[in-house]
Image (tube, rainbow, N blue to C red):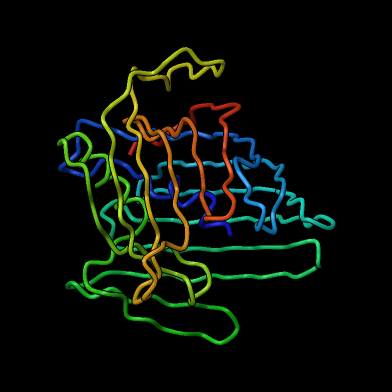
Length: 262
């Protein structure tokens, strides 16, 4: 579930040459998680949790780390989930690596790690999970930060729709998705109880991303993510919709992080 919770944040990257005047900033943000809606048929009835997301620029690429703990209230009982998700992506979008640790209250532990790279238009992914596996990704596949940066540029250019194949890592069975994005008009920021400090901007872009399993025959996405994002890469709030229930992430605290003088 980790990618569904925060893939939107992991898709934010430093401005590439075409986007040079819009720099994404290194920061650490804390979000509280709670249920947004739950249909009568949904197994999940309540949610409480917190996630700490760190995005930091290094000289050769961007590192993202997300640690979160969440408890799901079920019709009968409760289950909890703890996860650590760490990625690195090259500045030019040519390489990507990931490590995932997951643990739930049923004492199930999962570990996923691997890397991917693009060369001459061919993207290969390698999964190191006991039995090493290799996967050739569809032509044009992009990594998360490059994808989000292209979404921001589309927003600035007035484009409303975008489609892409995005590699997120994790379990090889759901490591990449076809993502259809809808971009709203730029909105002015309203008064907020959050102190953004130097990370504050006077506007944000509302976006909604639908994640489809490649080759799936169903018309409904696996999940959707809706969020408000500033030009500097700060996500003010987000919502993850699984169909029969949805979850909202509310920003509680955010601080800038030092960046290297490369």
